[in-house]
Image 1 (spheres, rainbow over the protein chains, first blue to last red):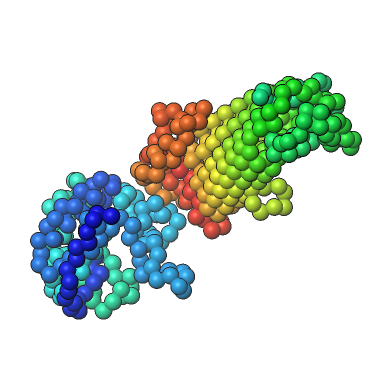
Image 2: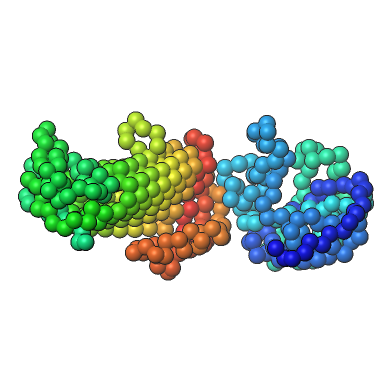
Length: 155
Length: 270
């Protein structure tokens, strides 16, 4: 409808790693989004990584697997604030919002660098501004062979 | 064309089945044909003009004057048009209604909006037990539409409710939202015991703190962005629900009833 369609004629392809992630647990949606936007801004400066979701932030996170055989992903109930009372939750009472930043990178090291920048940004914002916890998920190893352990990344 | 008015001549000793007097069943009939129609009155059948004076001719706009609590099945299976009831009405008001609107100035008795499918029902007084419920033995209660009650409702409001919106400005009795499968019930007043008993899914929205059973778990306080969107859909109603001073987006969420599937929710204004 715009009048023209402009696209690159050729594009390259290379094996890479997808699905690195950071979870930010905050006291309110506003605090979580504010922290994520600052972290995304810093992480996008790291070379060889992309944050594939719009704005770099995932509001409605999913987990690997579901109770249905044909459904490969379902609600990440352990980190869903509104389901705290009726599921095996990972959240404490004061957490009202959880957002996720997903990172795809060319190498494991590239993803680790981006995650480190993200964690440092979250820490600089601090608990006084509503950022209560930082976490990540590998869904019991089901997400793939690459595991990113936050404490190792920050050493 | 003026509204078709049924004005009650005298109060019958027995209950009257009003289900033939709905807009879709009267369409195309002359006043004399309508007058000759038969209504079940206790164990007898009586002509419409034996108990009603009939004026007007617009069958899509019906007014029932001097109504009282023994006129059952008003608006049953209605498929369009409007019915205004000036007074009280009996049981099974707007039962199975598919479209159109029914407005009652007084009270309604048991099973109002029972198994209602769509349309709009407004009750300016109180409503009895089982509003929006399923008939005994049936599995699906109200399946769509909007019901507004300006007074109080009895027990088991929304029992087996499947879809639609039940808005109650006053209080609700015990077992409100029992066995609810889905849909929304909003209560501005107090609620009774065992709210949401065995509810599987659906939302019960409350302005006052309820007495919840132990099978509802606290899921914490939340700012919910869907609430203002839902409230704004009520702004054209002639109701307290249309007043944005009553709207809120901050609620305490309780999940349950975990004695069954437990995907229902009770949201309480903070």
